[in-house]
Length: 235
Image (cartoon, rainbow, N blue to C red; front, side):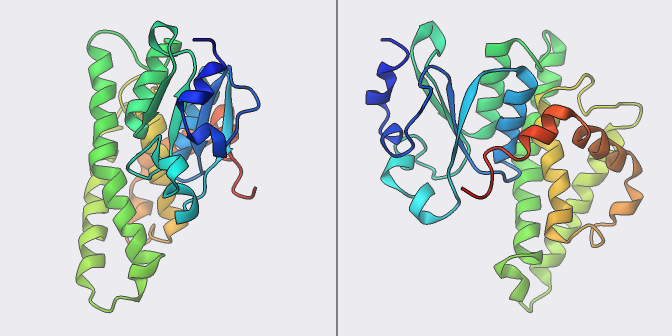
């Protein structure tokens, strides 16, 4: 199969048509989850084409998008040059990060360091992402109108607990798992989301000095600055 013939195998390509079908196709939106992949691609120097898939039902619940990700969540990718030179479609940001790291040979160390990075990647996927996302729901979105304080208090307390785990891990480290890795690319955008949610004061952000410095280091990276705006919010 040539690098362009994959289009016939993936219905999503009929709606979000590639202009460069030979490169990695990214289907995403610049949320905390979405920018993980654009930042990784920028850091790794992999050639790709970004397609703007909004969070509206018209996009993520469309037949075209569901054909690639039945869980109707961004991000997702197609790599026309996957394992054994065959095209591959992937969803779940953690799985995509591991795949891209292995493809590029970057940002995922060998030996014990590999599992240290994956461990902290899973910490983000299973803890920080879901819990911070719920915090955002009760601070910025529809849950903010709920009068019962208990849901909000639950996620404030859990977010503060997770931040304390991060703060402790960063003692004597610049990056969460040693060297800069896909674990940082997964974690830091979610830490940054606390400001977007307007929840920093609630979780006691000012006392997490190492975490604040960590986020600043991450945001200062040129690839991060580029990747945070890919694809652009406005089409």
